[in-house]
Image (cartoon, rainbow, N blue to C red; front, side):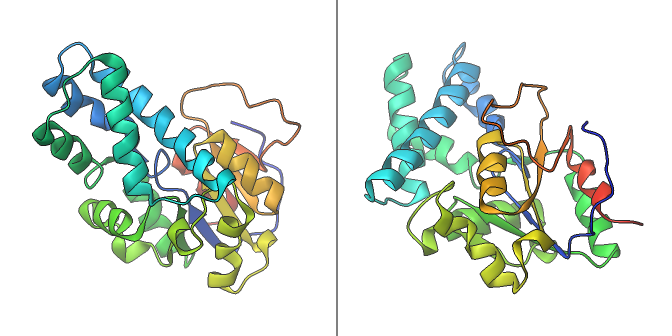
Length: 230
């Protein structure tokens, strides 16, 4: 964890969703059941292609909803690994995105933030039906408002139009909003845009050497609490 330096206390928190609140690789369990010996590889390739496609359609201004890109990434991953993606298997794996596993500490952190009077929301690439489903399935709806989707601007992170949704919805300056992501590229993009940022580096990977460290780095969502005196 990066050193904790005194900072002004943020007035709100926005969380990334996929990989930060919910484990995108939890789909590997169902993938392994469907395609024995391929579950982990399929989960990894699926996620990589999903993010690659968001960048392609944002850069080219050929928007497609995140759910559509997620399906197309699944189709590519299965074709690449020579897994027979039947309609039933496709429905089962896409259904996993409605019930992704939350990381173990997240509920306690959200409860603690609510007890401290901290407003919390999400800013995600996911389209609204996907976000409503996964947040509702985890029972997190009461703690997350607003739920901001890139769908409303038809671009994806790290496009400025997506990050601009935060201060517009919260009515706060960027410096007063803590943006939290486990995706280093997202934490860097939010830092470039002007947010106070926290990168949740769960795997201990090196930061991308783009001369832009996040405000702080932690190893679990509990690091958010260091920004707020109890």
